[in-house]
Image (cartoon, rainbow, N blue to C red; front, side):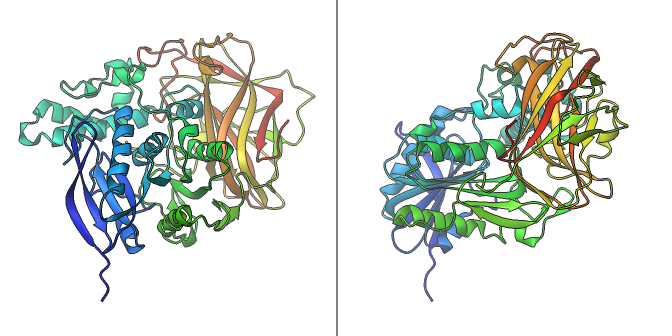
Length: 556
C-alpha cells in the first residue's frame, strides 16, 4: 500500500524577530508544493468547506496549518488587531516553508475570512516563493466602507468581540474573573439587548478590564478593524471564492475584478456559490434548497483549489476562469469574465403611490412622468427599527443569513415596497445591481436600506441583493444633509446571478433601518459611538428619475 503521508504536530517556524509560531504539518512522502493556512481561531478547528489540509495531502500537496502570533500554541504577544504584524509573519512563514526539506520550494496561501485576509496581506509583501493565493470571503477597510455606505456593521462587530472575549477568558481557565465571565455570557446569550444601549461606546457588556481591545476604539476609528492592501503589489495568480449571501460578496468580487484589471497577464479565477459567510457551504441556505449540486462538496470546491494551484505551477490555461451559481435556475454557469459578456440589463423605474406597509408601488419600464413631483413617505423611528432578517448578514450573534421570507417585514409601516408585473417568461439578472434614488429626510441624517427581492406566487419575498447608504457619508465623511430637500443617491446592491421565473415578480423594499446588522441612525447627526436616543423622522421617495438598474447592460 502506498503511503499517503504523515501529520506532524507542533512544527515550529521562526519569525524574523525570533518568535516561534507553531503549526501542524500534513506532508506527503516526498517534497511537494505547500499550502499554508494561518489562523487565530485554533489550527485544529478549521471548519470551512472551501479547503482542508487533508484535501491538500490527498492531492499531493503539503499543508501547514499555523496558529498566528500569540494564539493557542504560538509564542509572541497577541493583539486583536495587528494587520502589519500578520503581513510580516505571513511573508516569513511562506519563505520558511519554502526552505524546508518537505517542500519543493513552491508555496500557496489559502483560507476563508480572516485567513483569506492575511493571505492577501502576505501576498502584498511579495514573498519570492509564493506562487498563488486562494482567499475566500474577504474584504478590506476601504471596500467595507463602500459596501456599508458609511453605516456600521454593529452585530458583526459586537459578535466578533464577544467571541474573542470568550476565548480570552477561556484561556485564563479557573483564574478568570467570574464577574467578567458573567458579562460575556450575558452578551452571547442576548446580544440584542447590549446593542440597544445608547450610547454604544458605553456598552457595559464589553467593559472588560484587561481585554486588549475596547469597543470605543473600534467605533471611533482609533483602531482599524479591517486592513487595506495594495492590489497592485500582489504579483501572483488568485482564486477568489464567495457566495451570493456572503457578507463580503461584493468586496470579494471587486477584488477579483481589480486583479484582472491590474495584472491581466496572470490567471485570476472566481467561484461564487449560493452560500453565506459560514463554514458549511451547503445547498441548504435560509429557507431554500438550491439542489444538491449547489454545495461545495458537489461542485468539487476543494479539488478546484488544487487544480488552480497546479495551473499556477505548470502555466496551463484550464477551464473558463469564472464559475458561478445561478439561483432560480439552480445551475452552475461558467464565463470568461464577470459579469458575463452576454448578460442583459434591465431598468425598472419606481412609480407611486406606495403606501407604507399596505399598498405597493410599481416597478415599470418607463418613468412616471404624470406625477413625478408627488413623493411617497414613511416615518422612521430609531426606537422601533426594522429587524434584520436574512440576506447578507453574519451569524456570530443571533442573526440567520440567506434567503428568508421578508413578507412580514414588508407589512411594517416604515417600509415601502415596489414590484413589477407578474413575469410571463423567465428573466435573468446577472451582474451588478444599483438603485438611483431621489430621497429626502427632515432629520439631520438618515439611512436608506434597499433590498432586491424575488416575490413568489405564494406571496413570499426572498432577498436577492441589498445595499445601504448613510446620507451624511454619501460623498465622504461629514457630507451635508439638506433637511427636507431631495438628494440624488446611488445605492450599490452588489452583484447577483438570479433567475426570476415566470409567475414571479421582481421587487424592491426600502426602509431606513436594518437592525442589528447595522447600527440605528438616530437622525441627529452624531457619530455612532456617542449618539443618544433619537426622534422619529419623515423620509420621502421621489419619482420620475428613481430607477432600479439590474444587470450589466442597464446604464440610464
